[in-house]
Image (tube, rainbow, N blue to C red; front, side):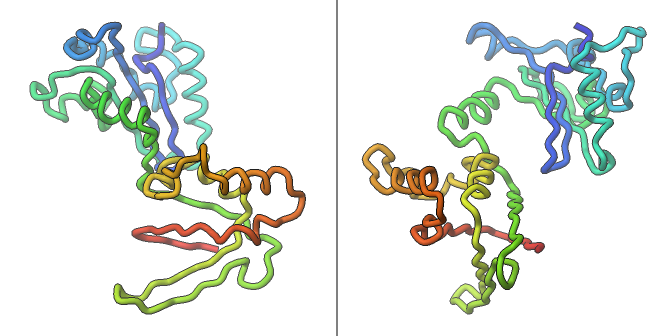
Length: 239
């Protein structure tokens, strides 16, 4: 109750986007695929008031604790001026009957995406069950290279190939930093890596790598591992 029509939200610090979500889950398959959300339910979204920091709705009733906490989190963002807002509606809506501009009017003037049952199945449920649910367009890797000798712990070299000039950079990276990147970006890193599809059950190498990392106090992993190759369409580097 008193949630301003917002069921959940997400603050994406990487893309600098604040997402408000209105959802209508149905209890059975038939309703999930066929029952539409009413426009009155979308009109209940007070996104414009909440973005302005209002703690009450137009009737003077205070928003619940979760919404007030969300407003406080948004107001505490230092570079809030660089953020954009987006509304996502998880429900069936006959989009062909309404223009995008009409939907935006209902959601406070913010860009709005409709996830009907087909999009929910194809873009939300299916990627999760197939293990490919995280697919970042841009990956930012921050590494601490303090106390490294020469060149800030990296070697750069440009080579000529049949495809043109390629710049190669080699850096010594602690295993903990690799773990942080994989934990954050998941399948965006491993999706097209053929090694991630090798059988883990009968593979003798992976358990040895795990044993070296967990049980060795010294840094043998730096000698045993021959590195990780990352390919990208475009790379920016800032030391």
